[in-house]
Amino acid sequence: MVNPEIASLQKGENLKDKTRIGIIGTGFIANGLMKAIECQPDMVVSAVLTRRPLSDFPLSELHTQSVDELLNKSQVIIECAGDPIYGTEVVARALEASLPVITMDAELQVTAGTYLSTLGLFTEAEGDQPGALAALKREALAMGFMPLVYGNLKGFLNHLPTLEDMQYWAKVQGISLDQVTAFTDGTKLQLEQVLVANGLGATIACQGLLGYSSADVEEGSYRLAAQAKNLGQPISDYLISQPGAPKKLPAGVFITGEHDPRQAPSLKYLKLGEGPFYTLLRNYHLCHLEIPKTIREVMQGGQVLLDNSSKPSTSVVAIAKTALKPGQFINQALGSFEVRGEAILINTMPDHLPIGLMRNARIRHHIEPGQLLTMGDVDLPNSLALKAWQYTLHQSQ
Image (tube, rainbow, N blue to C red):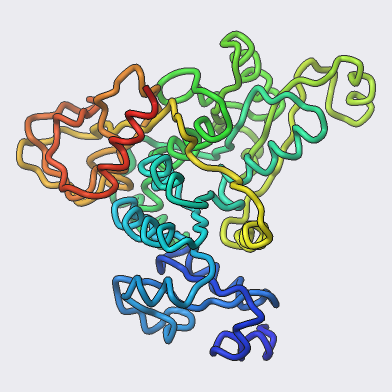
């Protein structure tokens, strides 16, 4: 139940005492965040930027289609539109107006975040897997751990899900068709772990990540740590629940690393095992419910929790799920049944097509299923996101 005092604040009373939150987007994250902020005594939603009328959306009287109105009414902007082309334009406006921007959108970060971070304070929020890993890294370093693996946990993946299955699960889970498809085919996971690799100073072990199947986080994480040791640097990767295991892996994140050998007896006593690898597990991530933590940190003068870095080394390439024909139009690749994404090292394929740019794209020639797309395979509309990617590519060299 919402406190009556907080409800009155949402109607515009005593806003001077509250942090005014402007939200970009009206999807699952935005909807949940608005409800969460209603319960925060020090925050109020001041405006919601939307491209569509939503009369049944919470606090619909705050809706606006004016970027200027959003910026004028807000002290901090939360971006969760799920569209990197649109998001880049609006976030750039906000940063140029000297407003801090917090996002929960790995696709936007990987596509344009390196450029956007040159304009002002632009940070990923705690709550989704990348932000949760960034927060866990802070804790791990403070305790003396030396990370080797920044890991994500998945229960299930299917690179080629059917439309019927995705329509069913979208209805069951209460999220959009494109979201559930991007989760299922692994594209969202790949984007998350690329952001983690770039932002936390890690790399990837191979195209598409290792993604070991495991019934146990500790066992699987140690295997990944051994690979990181062989590479000589930390890796960003994931574990997936072993088919037939009695219980799925938790919906969280983990860091596996090393510690001062002199602490081995203490760490064994504290139930972290024999070593030399130790795994710290955060067995949840609560998305929009955790965003207020990042808002408070930013408004109190805190630094960036996580961004795509000034010199990224990894990206997510678009891969055809099915044969694509010359002239075929693709409205958006993320969550589509034509294309999915995989993590790659930028220097191995500098001309690759980042999946985040593949919106309103037209195919130039025949593409085989499984083919990695290049910038030369499509016609893309001109956009600030495209210019931002060109900047990112230059920075990565």
